[in-house]
Length: 346
Image (tube, rainbow, N blue to C red; front, side, top):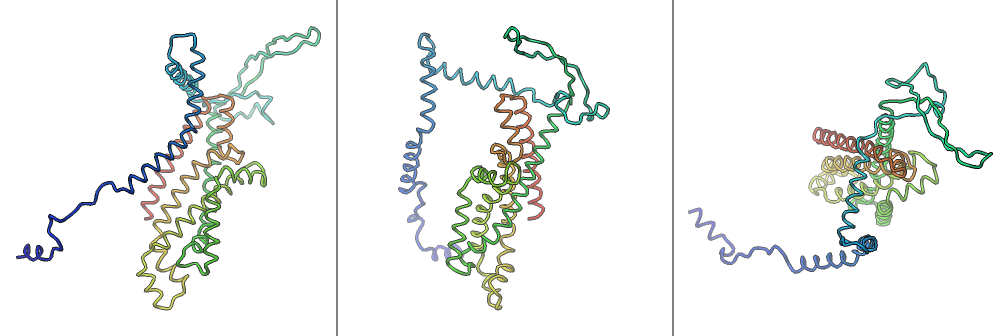
């Protein structure tokens, strides 16, 4: 009886049903546009690949080895050579005592010891005007975990930059989000101005803004903190505002019916809805800022990036390996900690 009733209420027989196709003509057009864009922009990397191939072809002009094979072997050999130089990672650090200010041999750092080491120095003889090699003995302070301690201290500074950058970005983005929400902005021109500010600070990469801030504040972490805060505020302001606009209208209408002001309506009906998502956005930005803070040192804006750039410039890949391991462990630990915190809070 029930089955007959359901059949009679059906709008059309099942033979007339049509499934939505997996691909429409719009999907095909979009795919073609994407392929065209990739084709037009492919010269960015194909030009360099062509240069590598041409150089390899010149090197093997008198040999029987194909150019593509020679280029491939050369690239792989470069990776293998770099990999061999990266391991084992550099943990210890040796420093001549004359390079240490206020050195006290009676108060050595823990686990460290003094050793004598012979160096070869090349000097110009003023009488013969020839380079002469002499052996010089120097006392060296060897710290078994000296370089690891240095990297950990730099990583701690990087975490501080990311943390303060995130805190400042939240403080900046909250008022921007209020004016960026079309349903709560008091005036139209305030809405447009806030949207323009959010778009502007989001469009400028952190490294570019850090370059200008380094000029203003000098070398150090302040420029890195402000660069991360400004750029992150653009993202958070946009995300926060869109959640306010997409919040359920029912609770808002109920609060408005009591005569509450727009701000009170936002506080009592919208904030409880969007708060869990705000936490997720903020934790993601913190995780992103930790990764971005590692490269702030490339423009002298503090953090571990300066140490990483210096070791790369000197081709000290064992030191680079230590830095990369510390960065990976820190980012992984922060990811686990943020996931635990988010689950407990939400």
